[in-house]
Image (cartoon, rainbow, N blue to C red):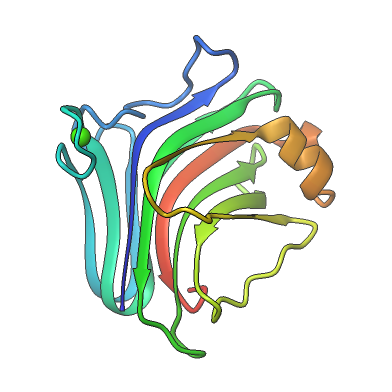
Length: 186
Ligand SMILES: [Ca+2]
């Protein structure tokens, strides 16, 4: 079983000119701005390369090969309000899977309050038929239908208003963006 997420660049923007993320284009080392997190077991790869997408600049990669667990590359940014968008370009891949061990590759946009509590999440996810995730009042799921390099834009205000009735927009004080892989929802 193998899954991989790569993306370039990532932009959390209030307006088209104001990016709230540090090193969202991955042109600096991942230690600048980004936090690595993993659990369970398997071969985790979180790095950046120039040749994942055939252009001269850098992309980040989050990959879990075999095993059972998760890995995540994430960054939280304080936000003054929720009228903003998260834009990114990503490619996804998964392989293998069963009813007890299924791969998901996703980009998550988490909504946190001032106490660092996760209130809800939007996940742009690539999965197979074994995935058991279902949307709820605090979880919005956006299906990836084309795993190849694609430009995505998630409108945060619209997500909260239309898909996340369990999250009070006034409580959202931080947005956390993550590249993540997991097996069995772990
Ligand atoms: Ca490149």
